[in-house]
Structure formats: structure tokens, C-alpha cells
Amino acid sequence: MATEVCRPAAARTAAPRPAPRRRLPLGRWALDAVVLGSFAIVILVPAGALAHQVLAGGWRPFAEALAAAEVRHAFGLTLAITALASIINTLFGVAFALVLVRQRFWGRALTDGLVDMPFAVSPVVAGLMLVVLYGPEGWLGRGLEGAGIRVIYAMPGMVLATMFVTLPFIVREVVPVLLELGTDQIEVAYTLGASRWQTFWRVTLPLIRWGLAYGVTLTIARSLGEFGALLVVSGDLIDDTQTATLYIHDGIESFQPDRAYAASLVLAGLSFGLLVGMDRIRARLAVRDGVQE
Amino acid sequence: MAMRVENLSKRFGSFQAVDDVSLAVPAGELAVVLGPSGSGKSTLLRIIAGLEAADSGTVELTGEDVTDLPVQCRGVGFVFQHYALFRHMTVGRNIAFGLEVQKLPRAEIRARVAELLELIQMTGYADRYPSQLSGGQRQRVALAPRPKVLLLDEPFGALDAKVREELRAWLRRLHDEVHVTSLFVTHDQEEAFEVAGQVIVLNKGRVEQMGPPQQLYELPASPFVAAFLGSVNVLHGRRLDGQTILGDGMLAPACHDGPDGQAVVYIRPHEFEVTRRLNGRTSWPARVLQVDPLGGLVRLDVLLRDGAKVRAQVSRERRSELNIQVGDEIYVVPRQCKVFGDRAANS
Image 1 (cartoon, chains in turn red, green):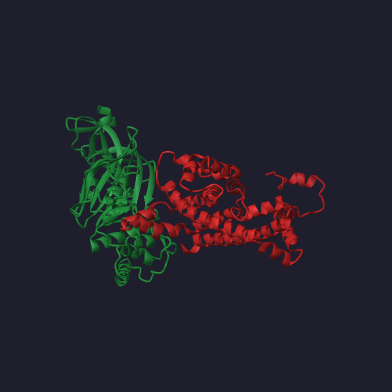
Image 2: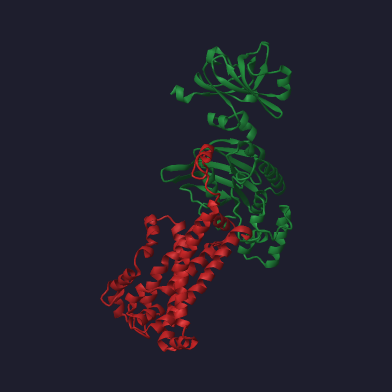
């Protein structure tokens, strides 16, 4: 067998032997260094730079920048939208996953593919789609305006936009778990006399809960950071429809970077907290598949 | 009749899974539906349970027409091949599930669970999870609840041979004690015979034959049943004037009935007697091709004069007595056989 590493005996003795080198471990070490280095450059260093930028002047300017009413409102709005969008998408996502897995209907494969559309479509385009539909001149918007319901440039539109971009997360996490679950346990529950609701609550839900939790975490993380669709849909009205991300954007645009930096750090901190949360859930998923259930 | 099915049919698209099946199981009996994969036996079972709806026909359980009754209300126990216990619940909670769903009082549930655990000989396992149990133990837990009717879908298929054997014996004992009407589905003929009071052979969605296992073995009604139940030698020949004639003029007087014309003859390995000398009975000369000792029995593959290969079976003692070796010229004497008209050749 002659490969790069295993050279036949003849070749080995014929060629002048170089000074003995431990080639393999060195190569691997170099690879690790390159990978970790890229990670540092792309993620850690910028984050560190941001933190330094904000806190270089001490805590006071940081606290002041965050004290402004617009900032409070912006974060409050972000959290409200995130909460609403996450809750609605959780309920809808689970129901949708169940239908996708359990029912046979015409166009199922197509629907399955379309679930990923929010990943493929730019959030800005998504926002525009909503404006076209729900805007004052839009197909549905016209009727809703008449009934006194404003969607675009208001909360409902922003929640819709956030729901759109986070739709796939829960569906994509729950579907594989449901598929792996199969129908046996469900059918056993039926034969034992459990109604569909009892079965869902006592059998299906407990078995999908970790996949679901992971999907919800992804949804929340994504909602916090949504920008493009909200920019289009909200109108970016300060103290009204301006979320944290829009506030940061505004800060940069209006040449008041300090506000932007401060808010950015808070948002980054929130995201980091979520990352840790996600990690914990992932660890729980691994344990769960091992010993307990 | 605790379980009765009449003219049941079910089609999936263009595939007829169950084709006009009727059967009846008396109360307290353990019947087995035996058939190859794709014969529709699982579908039949699921229709009886209510997990599938038949296209036509009726299902009756303990005298009540349940054809339109949802699965929850039928009171059937269903045991799956891959022991579908609730993974996220302990053994105790698993057994309690059916009782909790009926909203029985807590104390009663506790008592029942203890009772059932003892019945399946697993007292003390209440707090274990299914993943901590062996396959055999899981099936025991799945069999714990006492339904009116028990349906088992190849429940031992996913277990290894020794465990299968033990569980079969255990199921038979359990059934003798408790007498739940049971319908057991399998493709394993040996399993069917060991466990069943009555066997229903299913092929391509149709019932081929029904009856006690031994009857099916000795008096198969069709070539399919003859070939499916245990190993069998298939020889082609013809019937003329009450005689069965095989290749090279060999006669088979042991084969009694059968229509005139081309015929197919079925002889089981143990229905051959093996001798070294002619002694007045119809004997077929054969050369031993292979000798396979299988514990107490020895399997002999022999070549007949007309080129047909046949398998015979003798006891270990007989083999040593005659000192049968590969290459020996011996005689095989067919003592029993079954003849069917060769439909393909005659049509």
C-alpha cells in the first residue's frame, strides 16, 4: 500500500532520509490554530472591540446613553414584539408540524419546501411583501383601514414581519422529532382510550419538548435581531415603531454613534445570554436521548 | 364469538391489502393469523383495532358491532412489534396510563398497577424507564393491561431467538391463566404453531385456510399452505387412473387423491423413510449429496434418478444405524404426501 503517508520500503530507504520530524501532530496543530484564529478574528475580536468602545469612557456615559426615553421604548418594543411573535409562532409552528407529518394532503411536498422560504427571501423583501398586502393601498390593507385596523407602520405589521422570518425555526426543529417518534406511541395511547387532545398533551408534547424548546430559543434570538423587514414595515417612527435594532441603525445614520454602541452592547449581551441558553438545551437533548427517556 | 370479522376488504390505492376476509375467534382463544410479508395480516389487525377503517365489511367484538366505533372506545389492547411503550414515562406510569385516561381514582389506579406488575412478574420495576429494560421486559409491560380483546402485531419479531422462545412460552402460560381473547399476527410458522389454538393462513389479502395448527400441517388445502407451513419437497408429475406418477416412472402410492392430469406433489422431509435395501415398498433410488446434522435430527439432501433434488429427515440414531455418508446410494420411501392439481400446467 503506497500512500502519501505509507511509502513503500524501497522508496523509504532509497531517498535521503530528512531529519526525523513528527509531521502529523504538527499539521493538526496548525489546522487547529488556523480555525480558532479565524473564529477569533471574525467573532471575538469585533465583539471585544465593541465592548471596549462602549466602556472605554467608563460606566457613566454608557448608563446615560441608555437612560433616554427612546432607548427604553425601543427595547420595550423589541421585547414585546419578540414575545408576541414567539408565542404565536410556537402555537402555529407545532400545529403546522403536526399537519405536515401526520396528514396526507395535496401539495404536501411543496408546502414542506415553502416552509424554508423565509430563509431564502431577504427580510427586506419580506417586509415589502407585507406592505404590498397590508399597506393602506394594499389588497387587504384597504379593507382593514376601513375597519380602523392599521397593520403597516404599526405593531401588527411588525409582529407579522417577525413571525414571517422566524416561521421555519420551530417547524424545522419539531418535524424531525415527530418523524422519529413515529405513530406507534400515539396509536397505543388511542387504544388505551385517550382522546386526541389527551394524547397530544400527555404523549406527543412531552416527547417533543426539547426540540420545541430549541426551536423557540432560535425564534427568540432571531426576533431580537430582526432589522430589514422591520425597517420596511415599521416606518421607523421614533418612540412609536422603532425597535432596538432600528434605534441602533438610526444612531449610525444620524451620526450619533454612542447611542448606537450602547444599545448594540445591550443587544449583543442579550444574544449572548441566549446562546448560553441554547447550549444548555442542546446538552439536555443529548442527555435525554441517552439515559432517561 | 368474542371476535368476528365479516367480508372485510381494504384497498390502498390500487393495492388490495385485505380481500373479503371473514373469521371468528371464540372467547378466550388465542388465534394466529399467519402469512408472509405483504399478505395483509397487519392491516387486518389494525382494522379490527380501529386504527384503520375498512372499505367494506363488519367487525364485531364481544357481540357488539364496532365497525364504526373509534379506536378509543373499542377496549382493545394492541401490542406492537417495536414495543411502543411511552418512552418518557416510567413502567408504573405506562401501565397506569390507560387507567388514568378513564379518570379512575388515584388509589384504585395504584392498586391496579401493583396487581398488574405482579401478574407480569415485574414487581419492583415501577420506577424504571423503558430504556432501562430489555426487549423481553418491555413486551411484558406492553402486555400488562387487561383488555377485553388482545391484538398482537408480530410482537416478538424484534427480539432474538432465545428471548422469543421464552416469551412465547410465557404468553401461552399467561393466556392459559387469564383467557383473554387474542389475535396474534406473525410470519413465523413455528411461532404460530406453538402459541395458537387456531391458525388462519393469509395470502395476498385472502384467507387460504383456517383450523387447528396440526390440521393445517397434515391436510393443507392448497399448495400455498403446504409450502408455507414447514419445509416441503415439491415434485412434479401427473395423475392417471388413481396413480401418481413422477419423473422417470417413479410411483408414489402414498399419494392418494388428486384430480387426473398434471399434478404437483408435496412431501415433507420427515415423511420420507430412508433404507439401504429394497423391501417390497415403493422406494426411490437416490444418491446422498449432503448430510447436515441438526442436533437430534439429520437432514439429508439426495438426488433422485430423474435429477430432482429432495430433502429427507431422519433421526440421529437412524443415520448412525445406516451409517449414511455423502455419495452413498440409498433408497427414500415416501410414506405420506399431498397432491394438488398443477393449475398452471393444466390450464
